[in-house]
Image (cartoon, rainbow, N blue to C red; front, side, top):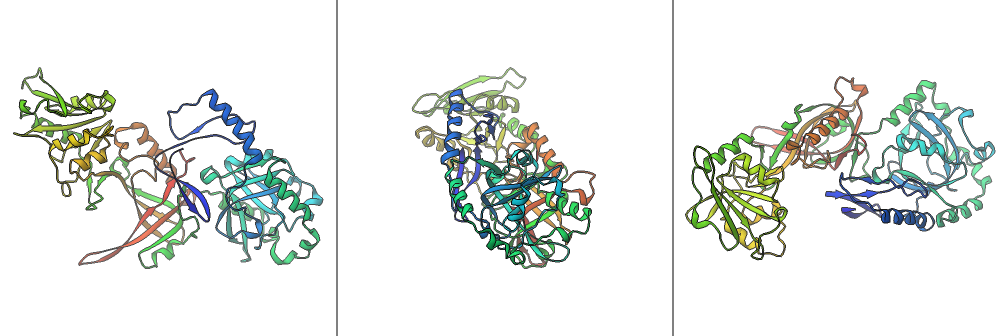
Length: 552
């Protein structure tokens, strides 16, 4: 893992990704194919490392215990996620995208639990055992990518099921009960692991199960386990309930997992500021032309502006080329210069200044250079070979940046702009002290700071109209890269990322679909007040939410 933040959540350690995160992960099952799951297109994986993975699998199967305190069915709470070590006593196919697992861990859930209605002939398992344990087992519905593994599980095997969702629901007779779901995807470690008999947790669980007095549990039929089979009046009711459960959200939450869902009607009728967890559908969004959602944001003055057109930059470069480079500013102590005359009608003078480190020129991929008199085409050509390019012009005694309507820095395909209101540009010679540092990184944020520039950041700004059957509200998306898992700074120059973003939005809000057919989004939103002399308004913003990794 690279750039993974570790922090505590609900008494356990949790990893949260940050900007620049990358990973290479593998299935931990002994004997499974060693296929890397990667977050990056470019990675290295050697034969020696494959051998290490296989050795780690064997070791983990026998030695690795549950991280953090072990969860028991007797300690579950509604609306939480937990890991469970248990034994499989029954299984059944429910429909094409879900599968039922009946499990127990020797303890009793303190809440009434949902018994998934299936045909008796479809339920695999020892009938006597299933009847004996009927008040100690819970039904877990698993979905999507977990179904195939669930089908292959052997009755009696010991399992560790990760990130089970306990959901509180009511049937038609208003009897409240707990449902157990293992949703699709692999976010937050969702999955099923088969534990060998040698695993220490299995040894402990087997000893405990053997000590359970089944007779004691049978006298408590009406106390804490409700047979909900009879609460569904028809097969249509069952299918409707399953369909509701299987409508997995196409977005996931990156924090605050303990918050309960709030209806939009309640959100709209509540005072601001507050934070909410909601489950809603995306009825519409703006702008429809997704490239128009990219803006430049100043975190200091909180202003937003459009990304300047490339033609504007070209005109600024043409204007600066009118003034020829000052020969006295060539070949300073901290940079070497090359000058020549372009073979065009205007006999344009061009100067390129290569910044040195330790009085030596660096490799092109590590070099920052400054250019005077260059055209847009020439500038872009330089960015393909050198790390950073800064357009400048000559004054009597120093080089200076161009007008801040132009980018002050180019790196790769990205143009970096400064805020006109908050920036106080310094002379270019300010870079000399930075160049003298041990291994200067030439990162845009550091260059901006040295040059007195308040860096503008690329952001996605979109308006989502969300509905949930109780109300509708407009929530704004203000995001650098977390929601789409795409850097806003790269979207305008990368056709692949533009297509990926369009596909994502077509998944969140499929064109031409009826409202009932739209997928669910699970989001955090926060309300805030905006007041001026004339009026007061409440606005809503999406936060700590990202598109599910298996959506596109």
